[in-house]
Length: 295
Image (cartoon, rainbow, N blue to C red):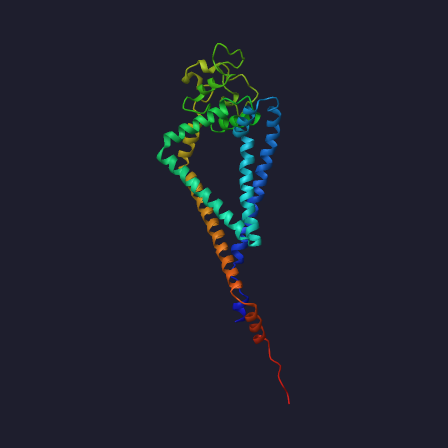
C-alpha cells in the first residue's frame, strides 16, 4: 500500500528523454539564429540608403533572414518542449504538441501537392528561385555565395529549364543593347566547369550566352539547378525517401512522447486532487508502527 501511494504516473524515462531532445534542438536553433544574424550584419550594410519596399523584399528573400526566422521557430518550439517537460507544465507541453502537429500537417500537404501537381510545384519553385537568386545575384553577398555553392556543387547554371540563359534576366548579365556592363551576355564564374580547381579565372563565363548550348557546354554547365537537384534526388531516391521518412517518423514519435507525458501529468494531478488531506493523514497514522505495552 505504501509503494502504491508513493508511486507516480509520470515516467522519468519519457520526461528526461523529451527534455534532453528538446535541449539539443534548443541549442541548435540558437546556433542557426547566430549564423543568420552574422549574415544579416552584412545585409544591413548593403541596405543603407534603399527604400522601404526594397528593404522589405530583401529581408523576406535574404538567406540570412530566412535562417534567423527558422532558428527562432526551432528555438521557441524546443524551448516550450524543454521547459514543459522539466517543469511538467501542461500549457507549454500542449503548445509544443500543437506546433509539432501543425508542422506534420504542413509537411504532409507539401508532399501531397508535389506528388499530385509536380509540374506546378516545380514552376512555382523555379519562379521563386529565379526572382530571389538570379536577379539579386550581385545585390547581396549572401545570395551570391549561395548561388555559387549550388552551381558548383550540383554542376548547374541558372535555375529554370532554360539553364544558363536564365542569367539574361540579371541586369548585369543581360544581352540588351542598353546594358553597358563588362559582364554583358555572360554567366557567373561558378557556372564554369573548372571553377572548383581554378577560382581565379573570373572571365571564363563572359559572352557565353551568345553561343549555342552545345558550344557553351564545353566551358560551362548549361543545366538549370532545379533540374540538376531533381536529377540528383532521383538518382538517390531511396536514400532521400529514407531520410524524409525517418524525419517524419521521428517527429511523430516525439509528438507521441509529449502527448504521453501530458496525459501522465494530468493523471498525477487528478490523483492528488482526489485524495483528501484528512484521509491521507489518517492513512499515514495507520501505517506507523504502534508502541508495544509491557507489563
